[in-house]
Amino acid sequence: MTYCVAMRLSSGIVFLSDSRTNAGVDHIGTFRKMNVFEAEGDRILVMMTAGNLAISQAIRQAIEKKETPEGDTIWTVPTMFEAARLFGDVIRDIHKRDGEALSQFGIDFNCSIILGGQIKCEAPRLFQLYSAGNFIEATDENLYFQIGEAKYGKPIIDRVVKPDTSLDEAAKCALISMDSTLRSNLSVGMPLDLLCYEKDALRVTRFANIDHTNQYMALIRQTWGARLQQAFAELPEPDWTQLDQQHKGLGLLKTQRKG
Amino acid sequence: MTYCVAMRLSSGIVFLSDSRTNAGVDHIGTFRKMNVFEAEGDRILVMMTAGNLAISQAIRQAIEKKETPEGDTIWTVPTMFEAARLFGDVIRDIHKRDGEALSQFGIDFNCSIILGGQIKCEAPRLFQLYSAGNFIEATDENLYFQIGEAKYGKPIIDRVVKPDTSLDEAAKCALISMDSTLRSNLSVGMPLDLLCYEKDALRVTRFANIDHTNQYMALIRQTWGARLQQAFAELPEPDWTQLDQQHKGLGLLKTQRKG
Image 1 (tube, chains in turn blue, brown):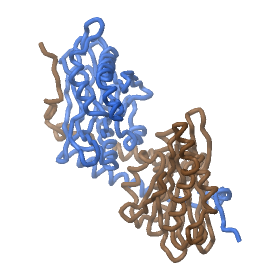
Image 2 (cartoon, rainbow over the protein chains, first blue to last red):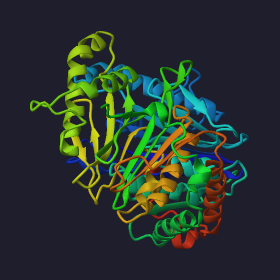
Image 3 (cartoon, chains in turn green, yellow):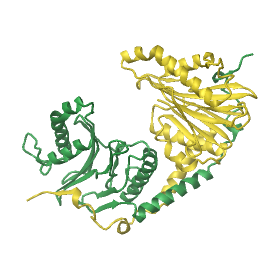
Image 4 (tube, each protein chain N blue to C red):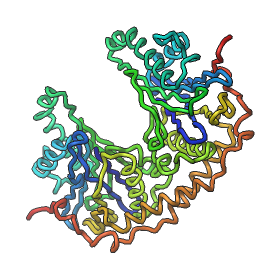
């Protein structure tokens, strides 16, 4: 599997991806899921992919050559919306080519993309694309997208990230979310790719490839676990008289041996 | 969906279940997932179910009448292992009766059971049963089972619960795990059923049905969120010089516009 997350904040966009792929537990590989398309001063597009790796790699190969009916490419379309459409069209092209052959082997055409970035004259935008080539955009009410093994790392994001969260805070939250996922699911693995896009930079300014030797990640892993345990210990334990009158409500659930 | 969790500790077993069922978002109901079979002083069995509600209810109806080849029932089998086998046999009976009819409507025969408790002369034991009627038992290395929407609430259990965790601490952890799940997934809902079985009691001593008015649950919900945010705020933010040399490792991921 995979875990990728991106958060669109008022100060920019945070992207984080793992690099594990697996086709069964005895076939595990390392493939990075992030790709960056940069024309400094004009645009930056960051793509992260989950699902069938062959499809993801085919998208990566085809996207630069894909054109809109007007002849624009990802390097010339005037908006992120049109860039997302181009990615969606590429997914559909690949489905047309490979969908039936995969289906003959019982393999779903399965691919998810997170696409974010900024094109000059627009604010940064963030999209999630589905296997059918359709897509949705992040808003202030739903400012993040996850693809792959999303559930383990969702609660911490739901509690912490808001539109005015700083890029560094959001990066910290993304790394904690990833840490929870890494601990609970073997199909997600290091190294990680972290990119914090600063609004209006129109180029990559902050990027880190994080592996087991990374000191900040080690600090996050140790400290977060310890703090969580401390916070847990400080919560009061259940007071059973307050929690419930004894046996109240158990009635219908309980069967006693007859006779 | 459903979320149920049980933890087998040295001092007993904690069981927690939600009560939401749904067949699509416009067909949501409240059905409690916990059932208790008690012969005071002799045995107590606690069953929690996830999956197809019709199958769960059929199991509940059939289990008391099911006999081993020796003529024992859940009220007379000498071990929890044999009780688990009886539950597994009932699942297989129902599959034999209903499996094909369900399959004609494209419905999977989907059912998961957590079964725990104690029979006199044995220590408390905890099992998880699958749709095929087979089952596994909890050990000190893997002391908890979850069924249904398990992923959101897994990280906190992985970090906190150990064999010598007290029943009250484990109940607190189970409620936090449930709270994370409730917040992130609409298909899991209140009220909750919480049962803490104290080793060798051989009857229910601590049970609570927890709804929106429950003060302890409200305290957990408010305090845990606040403590988590505080712990998050206290973690240092990324130091980018420490996190990575700028752009190191980005090379292969980055495509720049040609020409």
